[in-house]
Image (cartoon, rainbow, N blue to C red; front, side, top):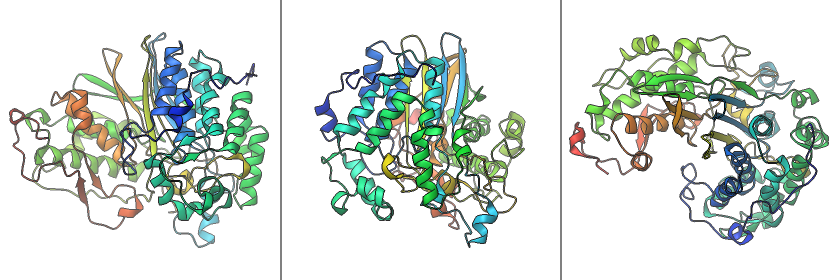
Length: 519
C-alpha cells in the first residue's frame, strides 16, 4: 500500500463487546441457506461507521471484514467478492469482480490423469486464489474516506475477544464437521473438544486475528505479495496444491461498467461475467413480453412463466459461459432483447419445457449479501463467499484463514467445455449483485445468498414490485420457489422440478390481481 496505516484502533466504532457475545435470534439464523440479516453485530459495525461520518464504501468494507469473523463459514480473507456501486459525486455506476484464478499447475489433464471425472470439492485442490481482499482494498482506494486500519479494528477485536456462536453458525459447523475434522488446523479452530460449539458458546480465532491485524497494517499486499501470503502459499504447497507465487502476486480486481437491461420503467445493472448476473437480465428480458400484472402474484400461471424463463436463461449459461479472458461467447446477444424474443417463443403458457443443454456440476453454496447506502447518495450492492460452507474445509495453517473451494465447485473437467479448468482462469460464479435505477439514479438494490436460486429470487422480487405493485416489504416477505436442476450436483440426473415454500397455496390462485395477495 502507499502510505500504509500504522495504527489499528480496535474501539473506533464503539463496538459493544457484550452484544458480540450474546446469541442472536435475528432473521436468517434459521436453517442453512435462508436469507435475511445474517448477523446483527456485522450490521451494527457498518451502522457505526456511517454514524461516525464514514461513507457507504467505508461501511461496506467494515461489514465485510466483520462478517469474515462472525460468519466464518460464509466469507472472509480466503474467499471471493463481487459488487456494483454508485458513486454519487461522479454519478457513475461501477462493477467490481474480486474472484481469484486457478493454480498455475491446475490443468484438466492433471486431474483427469489422476482419475478425477469432476473437480474435488474439498481440500487444497478445490482452492482458487482468494480475490475478496483485493476487492476490499480496491473499493477503499477509490472511494474510502476513513483510514484503512480503523475499518479493520472491529473485526480484529471480534476475532481476539470472541463472539457468541449463533444457532445458525453452530448448525453449519455441525453440518460440515466431517469435512472440517479431516484437516487438523480446521478441527483446531472449529471443533474444539471434537465437537461443534453450541449456540451461545464463545468462539475466538487468535490466529485469524493476527492475520487481520497484518492486513490492517500492511494492506492487501500482505496476502498477495507479503509474508502472510508466503506462509499461506507454503502451507498450500506442503499439502500438494499446484500454486506458484505468481498466482497470488498477479491477483487483480476487475473494474468495469456493469451490464444492464431495461425492464418496465427501470434499468437493472448487474455484475458481469464471470458472475452469472446476466441470468437475471436474461430472465427479465424473457418476462418482459408477458402481462404479469394481469396475474395474481402467487398464481400457477405467474410461477410457470418465471420458471420457464429461468430454464431458458440457465440453458444459455450452461452452453456458452466461461471466463471472458479465455472464452469468446455472445454475452451481449444473450442479454439482448432480440434473443429474448426468439427464446420467449419457446415458452408454452400451458406446458413445462425442458431446454437442451448440459447442466454444469457445482456445489451447494453459502454466501452473504448486504447493501449499504449513505446520505450523499452513494450505494454499495455487495456479495462475498467461500463458495461451499467453510469453502474447501481447509484452514491455512497458523494463518487462521479459511480457504474457498471455488475452483472445485465451479470448474468442469469436460474437454472443450467453456468452463473447463485452466491455469490462471476464473471459474463462472453464482455470485451476483444488482442495482436498479430510475432516471439514472439508484432506486432499488439487492441480491441474496442461495447459489442458483439467487437470480431466480431476484427476478421474483423485482417483478413483484414492478408488475404487481407490492411494497418492498411485501415482496421480500412473499413465499419463494425455485426450479431445479440448475448447476448443483445434488440435483444432476434428477427430473426437472419446482420446489416452493409451504406458504404457496395448494389451490390454484385466481389469475387476477384483484383477488389480493394470498399470503
